[in-house]
Length: 191
Image 1 (spheres, rainbow, N blue to C red):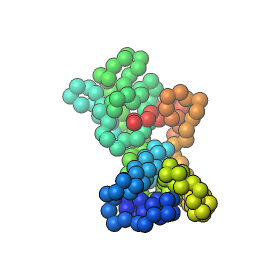
Image 2: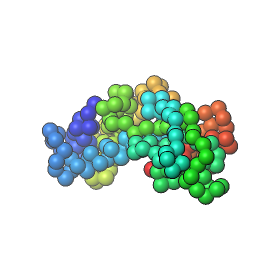
Image 3: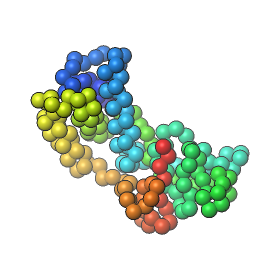
Image 4: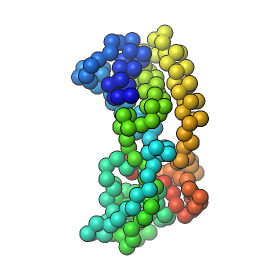
């Protein structure tokens, strides 16, 4: 699936409009924004296809600056992500005395880079959001769109287990131990 195909799904099924060849008019741009927000939101959770083990190394200033596209990073306590850098809240500094090897990182991908089943789910979720945001919620197609979204959700959940689970008891971020326990390592949101 391409971004234009996802935008067209939003326009056609979410608002009853004609599809476009390029994203130039106001509603198409708005639909694209909904699709891109939905992608980011969906991938922030972390799935087998967008989590990689990456070495995070200090630069010449002994800081670790995270590149764009890192949605979450698993870090040992007490470290957190602040302002796109790894921060030590105990020492109150960005200057670090260690690198982080084999850190799990949830990466932002384009819809074209996703498995088709994930792209379909995102497109249906975005279509439902777009329909509601454009006040097309009275559309006779909205129940059908919700049904397609639900079917895609079930199919996706059978195919891909989540790697990162939201831990509401952990304030300020996401938690999952990856077998280490949340007191040792935790997920820190990058954006």
